[in-house]
Image (cartoon, rainbow, N blue to C red; front, top):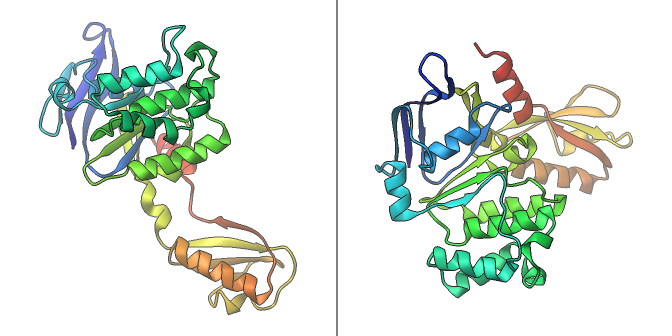
Length: 295
């Protein structure tokens, strides 16, 4: 879907300017959700601007489905949520959605679907400048997914969302997945990234430090299982369980389905479970390790 070859974006004059993106070579396929992560000033926003054709590389080439970004966007468009989504004062929510639908050449049914998907029905007659930060973000998300483009780019999509809508956003992104669609998210929220992304592109000082496979969460893994009270038959559900403390065990499973089945079996045997946590490093720890080892 997306190819970057030795892409650099420099601001200012050569030798005294700043390289916001530096020598990036990368392939992003269709059918996946990619997250762009890294500290402030890492180059995330510049990379998104390059992909959207807002700016051009100082060096190197970017292609999307074989076209330069501006040519691709002119022909095919893209769903886009900027980091700071705003609208002119006085617009009503319903008017904004209708305008976006016309710009996207979307049908009224598409507009109704986006309104329903983001729970905007009770707020259609409200001026957009009266919306809370979370509601305005949901309106921005509605316009980004309105036409279901093959390329969707979301800059900090969880910003301002309450916990309920963060969970619903995961469901929306899961529903958007398609073999011919690529979703790219820039985010500081590594907990949410770990739940929704296939891969995390780690940027630092404009350079790619690593591409982490977030899907490894679905692979075989060890977990720490802590019981709320003593129980003698943990082996009935986890034959290979290793006891590490009076109420704690390390158990191995082949994936989430296996873990769920075995936990259900353990509860059926009469055990009372306190906590279950993976022993593999989380995304935040992996990103920190990547950045700590940077050169």
